[in-house]
Amino acid sequence: MTKTSKSKPKKHSPRIASWVYGVINPLLEIIPIELSFLRKGNVTFRFYNKELEFIRSLENYLSPSARHVYRDFLNANADATEQLSGHDELVHTLESAAQEAFTILSDNPGFVNKVKCHLNEYLSAGQSYPGGAYQEEQFPLLVAEHVINKIESIPDHFTDSKFWARYGVEFLKFYSGHEFDILNKACKALLNYDEALMSWLQAKSYHLCETYDIPAAPIPNT
Amino acid sequence: MAGIVRTEYFVLDTGPLLDFFVWQCDKQYHSTWLKNAIQIVALKDEILKDGFRAFLDRHKGRLITSSGVIAELQGHILRAGGNTIELQRRFWTLVQTQMCRLKFLEDTRHIVDMNTDMLIKLGPVDTSIIEIAKLNTGSYKHFIVLTSDSRVFKRCEEEQVSVQWTERTIEQFVKSL
Image (cartoon, rainbow over all chains, first blue to last red; front, side, top):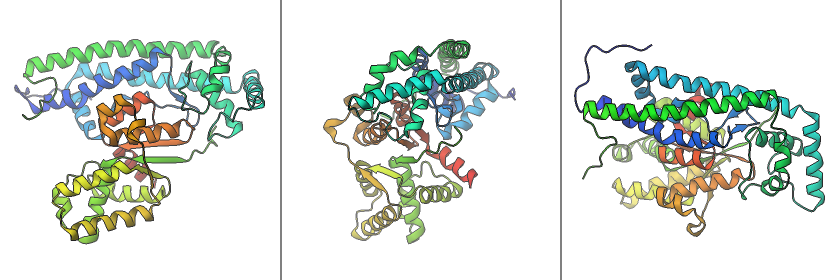
């Protein structure tokens, strides 16, 4: 619950500085990473736990020692509660949409057969098994994960890099249908929200620095 | 999908390991030497400390760090004034004993193979930690970097390397006991 403090912080307030350094600045640094995933449609879904690995609730981006500062920031700033809570709701919606699309895709016999067929073809050509530590029966799930994440290419230190370079385009054709439309919308909704959130965080940081006369980042001792 | 069980390996950076050894040293030798000189970063209370010890025991044989991290411990010990043979002997005996008991794995990344951008921003020790996790991630084994350092956390996110805050991981582990 957001509370209104009776005493207004003074200039150079360490409390205000903690909001900027402990919450706003880390979020301004990490949200662009989230945005870079979302712009590519990569929701970082993982089939083994059905969670989004690198798209997190805001509190989980902050170091554990900053969580108390985060709560204080939310309690003291009604506008922050309004702005920041929307992010976590959209992450939850995105995760649910990814789970739903993944279930539909991994239950699709046409998709599973195609993965098995291409895997056999790949192995017959003398290539080594591309699934790394995953068992062969889990391989269609890994491929489905890549489709959910709209992966176009896989870095060459991954065991399925060559496999994906050869067949990825065909698998990405399965990114269609009602569940994928919902996933795409959820991804865009979070993307738009994040862009607005970045602007709000920048404005809030400037406002706090101006009002309380604090530097935008801690100045190292000289 | 509920049946999928993944073997998790944890890649530890200097912070949690130093915390752990400082605490163990204090406990084993009843000496305040290290505790007074080195600030514990992640393992702030007794629950977290005991939790971390139990966590390491649970993941025995699935813990990994880089040789650089071990070398970095030496720097901290010297800065703590541990330049007498007796203090050094105590500390390193404890480190060897614990690492042997926990079947700790140690890996080396060569400086010439490191990503230059990461090296400039994070230095060789943190870079080696991230690259150990990254290369193993490519083989779809689950390597998770445990850190209390926000720069390491951020870079892992950028590189799509699994990363968790040490404190949160231990808290969750303790709750699951």
